[in-house]
Structure formats: C-alpha cells, structure tokens
Image 1: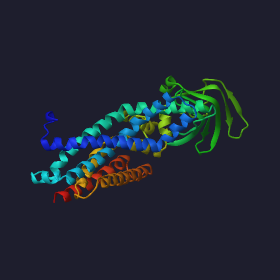
Image 2: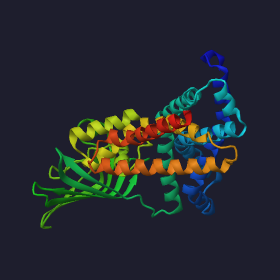
Image 3: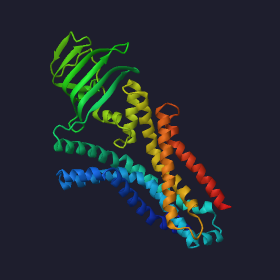
Image 4: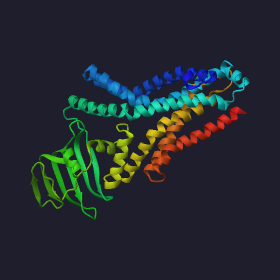
Length: 379
C-alpha cells in the first residue's frame, strides 16, 4: 500500500474493509445462486445429468452473479468496518486526531473505485463468455433429458420503423444456430398478413448475413398466400421475395429475446444498438432496453462507490448498536436501490426518460443521500 502514497489512516481503513468485503461477496453470491439456480441444478442431478456437467454449469453461473455482488459487498463491508470502529472507539480516536468524516471517506472511495474497476473488467471479458456457454449448455441438457424439449422463439421484423413480418419458431438452438419448425408471416403496408412461409429449418449463414440476408432454408418450405389459394413449394437455399428476411444473428436474436445484456460486452451491445437503429429490426422498447443495459454496464460497477460512501457514514453509530444493524441496513439499502433501478428501467422502456438517465439516476440519488449523511456525521 505504501507505493500508493497511502497514510496510516488509509491503510487502517482499507485493511478493515477487505475481510468483510470478501465475506460479503461470498455470502451474497451463495444466497443468489441458491435462490435462483439451486433447484434447477439439483433437478438436473436427480434426472441423471453427469456431476461434472452440473459442476460446470455452477462454475459458469458464478461470474455473472459474483460481479453483481461486488457493490453490495462494499456496502456491507463499510457498514461493518465503520460499525466496528464506532464500537471500539477507534472512530472517536480518529476524529480526535483531527481526521474529519470526509477524510475518512477517502480510503473508502479508493477501495470502492478499485472494486468497480475489477467488476467492469470482469463484466467485459469473463461474464459474456461464461453466460453464452451457460445458455448453450443448459439447452443441450434440456434436449438430452427430453428429446421433445423445445426453446421457442419469436421476433417481429421491422424495416424503416414499420412492422413487415413476424417470425415464430418451435425451437431456437444457439449452439447449432438453427430455427426449427419456423414460420414467417409477411405483412403488407396496411398491416394485413399477405403470405406465410413455413420451413422445417432455418440455418444462419454468416456469408449471407454480410450481404443483407442471414438465414437460409433447410429441408424445404412452403409459401402460402393470405387467402390460402396459392401454395408454392420452395427448395433449399431459395428465399421468396414476398417474405422479409430476418436480418439478425443468433446472438442478436438472443439479445432481443432477453431483458439483460450479460451475454455481451459493451462494444457488442453498442453494435446491436447501432444496427437496430439503422435497420429498425426491433421495436423501440427493445432498443431502449438495450441502451439501458449498455449504460448499466457502467452504472452497476460505479454503484460500489456510491454504496461505499453511503455505508461508511451510516456505519458510524452508537456503541451499543450490534452487527445485526449493519446487515439490516445493507439489505434495506440494496432493496431500495434495486427497486429504484427497475422503476427507472420501466420508464426508459416506456420512453418517458432517456435510458442513460434511467441508468444513472439511482447513482445520483444515492450520491445525494451519501453527501447529506456525511455532512450530518461531520457536524
């Protein structure tokens, strides 16, 4: 720590934060994994899935969950560390030596910034790779357990902001990049169905995608007019002019189906946003959700700094206050933050506020509360 130019007070505070932070990361990760995935994982074991496969699934889950707990753990660590300072009168000693509350927040901000940087780096590198692998492996397990297991998919097709078609598939396989039992309904300018394409399988072709296509027919297809009087049988490769193409990659399709962007880096999300805006292949709500997810990749790590500056002054409390208060406060603050973030996401998708404002509003509000609490504790 000496090479960072830290003084004794800085080293004291940071050393006090490390242990509770590691404990918080482990505790919150275990709780979230147990609450969200444990039943599914045990169900796989009961149905005979290999232990090695279940362990691999568990390992793939952890990066995405763990990164989300970094900021929460900073909040818990600051509450516990400064609570201990108060109970052991170390906080009083620091104040008596001339250190203000603002001065004591400096090492907290530094520690939280380092945590935020690590979270951002992992979220850009390890998390997307692990999440894509998790989705593909989970789909493979589902098919092995039940050969009839399907992953249905549906996607509206837009051109220049107008709905021109709707794609539906009984099974979407990300690993093989195929859509089985696919149906594409084409709409005319008045929004009425004009024709229907039914294909046994659509396979993604990267070469065609670069030329404005993307998916080619496999196993044959039939094109039926809206009145049902005309039925045309189509061979492989050919694509009828009457039907709009689904110009989305399997990864884009996955992003459009989901509400989170854990499977993609910021660069990939930004590319999806640019493509969606240029070609209007998805709805405005989906674009807003992608933009919210993009800005959230910055806002989520930065929450560690806000949590730290909020938790530290709140941790300065009376001698008789127990550790349980720290746990209770951390849960209450996290619940409030997550509720506010979800509310902002709803407003962003509805078009009431810009996505970047929705992502950073909870941080701004949290920073305001942190400033007020620090000011009051410094009196």
